[in-house]
Figure 1: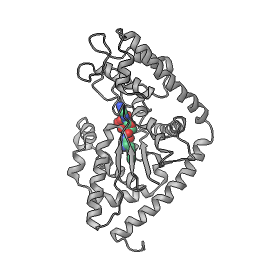
Figure 2: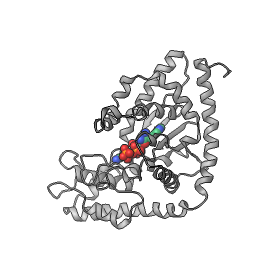
Figure 3: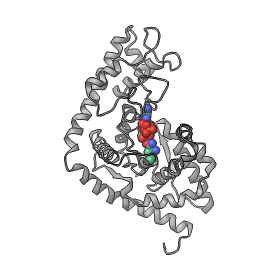
Figure 4: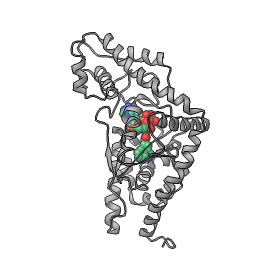
Length: 330
Ligand code: ATP
Ligand code: LTN
């Protein structure tokens, strides 16, 4: 059976962008694939984070994984830090990637351009190495991610080529990034030329936000000149973003969403309909989240998930250790 693997780092409260670009798609693989979904908690340490916040974010993400339809019988749900093989494989594969490659990563360039150059942490620089280890440790065939993570998966593919060529055998499986048909990059509601990101409370919609506040944010979303509803990211970035959100949540194409709104010439009416679809979807998630968050389910799922994940990870790690010639791994 083919394997799918993905994860989210618990750096903040999950947004509608995280949901549409990543989370919503994770469950699509659990019937046809062996599905591994984890919380990338070690990745969350790459930028300063309050320990209590990290703890709560981690718990919330697991509850949201379950609330969004991941079935722990079909999907192995676990914490990265519960499977020490991630760090062990990281220590090996870091030697097969180059600093030049890492410094060309868009996400690193964006983050580091806003920081004092002399205090950029090693972890944030080396982030894609650990991410590659995460993927390779499970022989993943597909990796569902939003657009901003595609480059990191491509780097992982470069590593696979290099490593397998070096040892002249298929030690690592070649992973394929897969993205949602609609909504690989949801934009901020306050500035639709910028990505919706956990760190922008004004333009964000959070999955655990009060429903009234979500509705308000959509009604106030920055829109464009004119009154027609059609998709054009350059002329109408705000309307295009809302159309994308609508299409994704209705599981239809952008063209079908345009068709639906072709006779609507008032932005207010359009926004009201988008808001109601978003509120409906998020309220269902919140209802399930509330049932889960204070139950024992989270700990049970993580305990079982760690055991299942470790079994696979250990095998792959041993294979790699033998390949590179670490003594005693025979
Ligand atoms: P941060 O604000 O800390 O950079 P983030 O909101 O970008 O975080 P990540 O943890 O980096 O979120 O991403 C988790 C997953 O959600 C990734 O697969 C990422 O591609 C996807 N994702 C994040 N933001 C968006 C967005 N605005 N639209 C679509 N997908 C997104
Ligand atoms: N970098 C991803 C999280 C992540 C991930 C992974 C995703 C860490 N390791 C492996 C897919 C596969 C992010 O959410 N920013």
